[in-house]
Length: 379
Image (cartoon, rainbow, N blue to C red):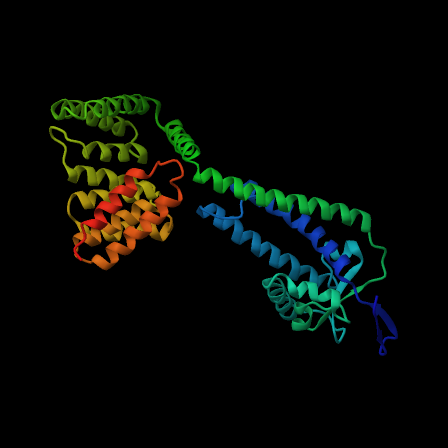
């Protein structure tokens, strides 16, 4: 390895090359990974999923990144330029003038590592060819990585490297697996059923008795959909059962949502206004549940309250840009407000979203409806 002489202290240092630095990084990766697993266990999230889709997953990812930054800065500044991985391999970071790293220089170096990795990791590969074994981040911060002279544990470091690679590829595999599950309609159905089962498990047992009766009545209403008078009679009983459930368990969003759905069917005494109130109560209890948000939006459409529908569906799109139903609802609202350009934009988005997840034809009806709505737009 290259040597640098320090005339002031008459010391001789050796630059650390790409291989030993890579092993040190993987050793630190293992340590940070187990810290990440601990954080995920506390939050109840999956540490192997790369894409955050919920608030807790987003918090997990952000908090983990903060830990990673603090981990590097703390050890670089307070432990003679060496993280546990670097110490394990007998290397450390020094400034080119050999003064101690401070937090400002350490943070600049950390940002420099982002630059080094930004374009196909060329900033790291640069270490192999550089005479002073500096990566781009070293040049940006004015640092070297040198050998300390202590015996490095190469064999164990290689073991850590292999473990780190296995965990990396497993993380990629789990990410792909989760994305495929989200795209599979049968698994989506299972996920919805699991969610409903969880909700029912939290429901007051006595309220659940009335709720289960309501489910049976909804099934009978679907079977009798061609007989409006029979549906009215069944739905009247259905609404009564749901109200009884709410008398027992008034803070259950799922019951409120089902009551709102009941009011969208023909009935003897029910009104759309009552359905809107029921949907709004469900949203109030679970304000980030896009199903409940869209329920309120759909009711605004039924009541021809299109401006309020626009505001409602926009709530969903602020939470996720992957909602075909919210884009469909916005398109319908804008169409009825005469804002055709925005209506077309959201109809196209709805078609794109539904089409991507329509491998098994589960969104054929929705796509047809969007196309019908687009065709009815005035040119």
